[in-house]
Image (cartoon, rainbow, N blue to C red):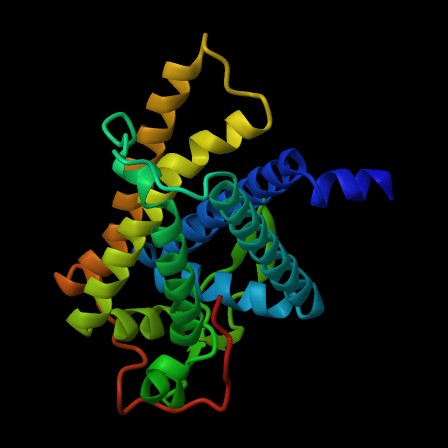
Length: 262
């Protein structure tokens, strides 16, 4: 009990909670990007990936619930720490000393709220289909032409009928407004990570003066690649570099499969 009290009832404990949940969420963000990057390969890859995730059944829901818990704890810790900081300084400074503070650090709360709203929309867009109901109503079968493997093991065999995630993603990002919104939101997420990722190491005592500069540069480099990676998907679709593969365009046979997206 004392350990839980120290973690959840002290400022230091809450900083650890925010840092550790942040690590978990960043790991998910990286995995999510790597998985979705299969959109640039043969449709078998992203379609096999989606089918594999869906086939996990209860295990997939356990992962989703854990992610929701991580997000909830992260938001809770950030909110409580913010309120504590305001309570400790009830009177605003006459002059705000923001010269040395970066834009990312000064907008952490704002970008956090916007990113949360974006994540909810992203779930409605590609997981539940609420934000693109017309596309989700047009559910097409896709027949795997090759095995899909994970770590060298075949998890989806050739000939398996799966949901066409490739076409769904392309159609989902073709509206310019949707893609631009996605790009802006990912930009804000990157800005959030720019300060948050470095703060995570500091909160758990892993940021030292000796390697602080290296850490800062590493975080900046990571954020650049993360943003460009996420930009590449809707950007390539808007530019016509990634197109529906033609097998399951309107007029093809419809499938009764629903909600098989990653």
